[in-house]
Length: 413
Ligand SMILES: NC(=O)c1ccc[n+]([C@@H]2O[C@H](COP(=O)([O-])OP(=O)(O)OC[C@H]3O[C@@H](n4cnc5c(N)ncnc54)[C@H](O)[C@@H]3O)[C@@H](O)[C@H]2O)c1
Ligand SMILES: O=C(CO)[C@@H](O)[C@H](O)[C@H](O)[C@H](O)COP(=O)(O)O
Ligand SMILES: [Co+2]
Image 1: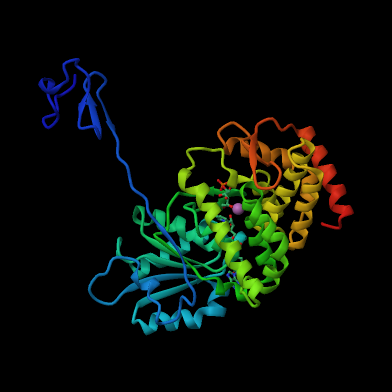
Image 2: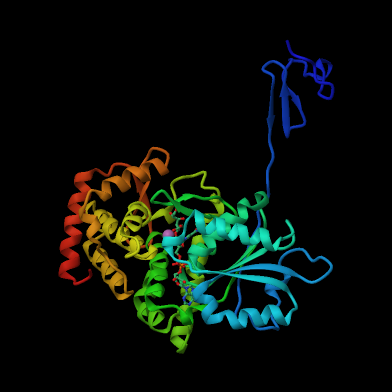
């Protein structure tokens, strides 16, 4: 027996047809005793290019978050290497502005992108205590730390605002521009994560001056991904100036280097956002920005710590470039240009794990991740892509064999 609910519409307010009633945002039906609730949540976040971010005259970092009375309070999570190299000016900035802050330094790299690190940060935040809406957590570091802190803030009190200051090239062009957060779990890449935008991301490329060259190459791999799937002009820029960008660490030490760094970073970020914005929650699982991310998550985790994220992505792109060439989607000449550019950018085209059953496992996991289909992005020429669902293990093996020969001949391993 059901008891009538006092505050809900009675039968007298039902539609003439006896159908459900409601205000359009929710409906109640007595026929099946059910409420269907609909709501939408607007999303807006900003990515701003700045320079000299910690110059005391700049206010970008202070203006984010609602203003309350009394001193500003901020919890800072800073990559340990960044803290060692840039910590003095970071602290001087917040001291100058009389911010009541706690700086929590985290030694971040792929092997610590895990639960324990996230839990430790939560504990520290809890101890410092932050207001739920107007004291954004500030993360200053690479993709690993931004992904962890993004996850932590999305969980803390079911969502606390955060601000990102990326300090690596991957951070500037990729991890710092989207809404995905995550940690590795159970040997799987980004197995736990959320979609949670940082309200503000401040891009200051001067941080790259202290980054190792290998990590510049690592970021160039994600830029190359954007070039291959959607921006032929970006590919040409990388061919012309990639070595200079690497040598100068995108610091614009020469006038050509400055023009190239500005244009390449702007194109890479803009191209990424053109793909992300219409599909922020990944309702559509055919994503061209997944190019290079089909085999690489498994390869990267198995190779840990020997392959960096961008390096694993590059190995995946080399393999799928060869596969695309075998299908006639990419000419042999373009295939060779792509492999040559990877080498010029200081990136690997090959990893011994390719010649093992790991690839089959990786493809099966990608199919689960993509809701039962391969949805494998493949390049079409340079600057375009399609999705395929029919890659068989034999085709993969033949592509691996061909890549091994090409990589050996070209000395690109
Ligand atoms: N959320 C996303 O959409 C997204 C997108 C791309 C990549 N990612 C993730 O990003 C991670 C890779 O990011 P990453 O390459 O920045 O790695 P990272 O965060 O491990 O940083 C690389 C290394 O550089 C050091 N470092 C950082 N900034 C420095 C600086 N300015 N000077 C000197 N050393 C510095 C770090 O301590 C670390 O040792 C991967 O886990 C990947 O999955 C996420
Ligand atoms: O590496 C990343 C994110 O970690 C980006 O470069 C990339 O565009 C995509 O987000 C990847 O395809 C990863 O997606 P997912 O496997 O974590 O769902
Ligand atoms: Co990536």
